Each structure stands twice: as structure tokens, then as C-alpha cells.
Image 1: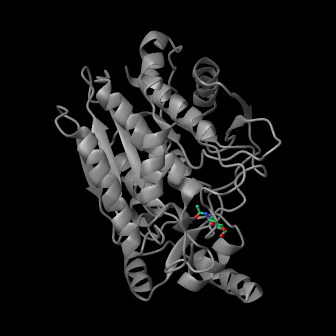
Image 2 (image 1 turned 135 degrees about the vertical axis):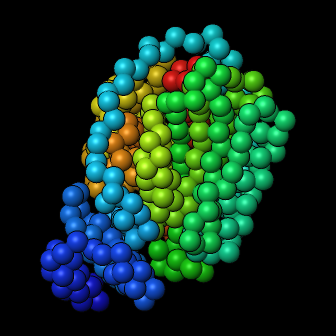
Length: 373
Ligand SMILES: *[C@@H]1O[C@H](CO)[C@@H](O)[C@H](O)[C@H]1NC(C)=O
């Protein structure tokens, strides 16, 4: 089966390289159920069926599914944003008290609810129910806060993404963004299989909700705007984050920094607890700054991870559009949660740790505060 898929991919690749992809071709191929995937940095995208796409996912292959953004991307030539100088962390006396209000029990309540949906697959009705739960929860937290907005970002598929915005008191730009993906997947049976997605990416999702809550209760008023993003469809080729990042690029939105939290709740028993900073498709200046933040605000240390590779999480969608990104991960690759994408990604995994996840929430809160205050 895999060999056949690879043969077909080579076959379609020959055609894909022969001419630019026309608008009509995108419309008709999409209507026939094909998906347009970019499998390597800079490569021409290739048409595959949904079955071929799933086979690739099962082999662990990462890719951008660019079906819905390709035409926009073609009209937006890659341009790296000007290098940003990041401020020395200097608001300890404001950040530390806010950090101390972060609650594991709130995160646990939200994650128990989110993992109780059969799955959070981006095309499943339960995936939409999960996005509605996040929208309601975050909207309630934001209610009565002047200028703060919480909006669904709808897509052509069932589950929507969500954007919460805290306005800047001095300027409407540049934006600081922290993101996580709300969807989960059972790779053996995506549409109806059980996928609690407790760690992937339930932990990042509830880290963001709790950071947002702590900042709202603490009456955080940044100088420049802050946005919290919960993405749909990360597992299916970074769909939600690409839709949003390309829209921001097209609208000329300036982004100061982007940070992804995708899995924060596990470290391998017997190993030293660290944050593993992703080493590729990130901004090295921002990574250096993130290391300083971790030194300042976390009880655990950090190390550089081995390269994650092409299209490995939502930060890659922002990096593709030239924005500065960073991504602290729960453990060095190989020592990370072994149960992802299965029915067993739940709270019982040996090595799952709320105190570990809390460290990422602390760093996420400090990231937002120090960057945008
Ligand atoms: C987690 O999954 C394992 C293996 O399927 C199961 O035995 C266990 O009861 C589950 N735990 C929770 C909290 O659902």
C-alpha cells in the first residue's frame, strides 16, 4: 500500500512540476476530493487523495496541506520580517505575582472536558463541539473586559479556529501571538476513532486558556496588542494556522513574535526535566530571548532540541510567511510522549506531569507580558 502511494506521488509529482497550478485546476481537483500537499521546503506541491494523505501521516511524514492557501501564497512572495530586538526581561515584580495565580486545577478541569469529546478531529462534529467549548470558555473569561474580543475564525471544514485579542494601549501593531492547536487525531481511524488528545495538544490548549485567564484577572493592559490563537486542523497539514498566517500576511499585519505551545505535559520518567527549544523554522534571536525568559521564570532548564523537520507544528506556518517564531517543547524529541495520535494519549500515561505543564504556562505568560507591556 505504501509503495503504491509513493509510486502515485512520483507520478503526480512529474505533472506538478510541469506548470504552475491554475485556479481552475485547484477548483476542480478540490471538488474531486484531492488535496494539494507541499512535502519539502520550496518544493512544488503535489495532488494526492485523502487516502494517500492519511498514508503519509501514518508514516510520520510532515507536510503543509496548501489546498486552500496556495493561490494566496503565490501572490505573496516570501519576505522575511525585519529583525526585531527583544527586550531584556525586566518586569519580574509584575510577572511573578501573575505567574503565581496560574492554576493547575483550572487547566485540569478544561482538559478533562476537552478530552471527553470522542475526538477533536477537524472534520468531526465532536471537533466542532470542542471548538465551541473553548470559544464559550474564553468568551466568559473575556466578558466585561474593555476592548478584548474573542472570535471564531471559520474554515471550509467543520471545526473553527479561535482568536482572542487584547488591544494595545499605545499602538495597534506589532502583534504578539501565542498559539496552540485544538484538534486531535487517532491516526488509525481519524473520523470516528477515539482521540483524547490529552497531551497533543490538550496541554497547550489549556495552557493558553489559563494564561489568558490570569492576564484578564490581573487586568493586563499591554502597550502593543496580544493575540491568543487556538488552531483547527494542525494534524491534517497545519490547516488552521496557515489560513490565519496567510491572511495576516496578505493584510500586512506586523507580528513582533509568535510562540507555539504544542505538548507540554510529559517528560520521560528517569530523564532530567527540560524545555526543548525547537531548532529549525524558528528565529534564533527570539530563541535566545526565550532561553533568558526560561532562566528567569521557570524552575526547569532548557536545551536545544534536534531539528523537528519540515512542517512539524503551527510555528512553521508563521515562519513560512517570514514572521519570527519560537516553540518550546515538552522534551527532547525521542523522550516525548509516546502515545500521541492514539486512544491512549490520556492522563494515565506514565510520565504525564501537571507540574511540568505548568512551567510552560509560566513561560507563556512571561513571553506575552515581557514582549507586549
Ligand atoms: C488511558 O488509556 C489506557 C489505555 O487505553 C486505559 O487503560 C486507561 O484507563 C485510560 N485512562 C484514562 C484516564 O482514561
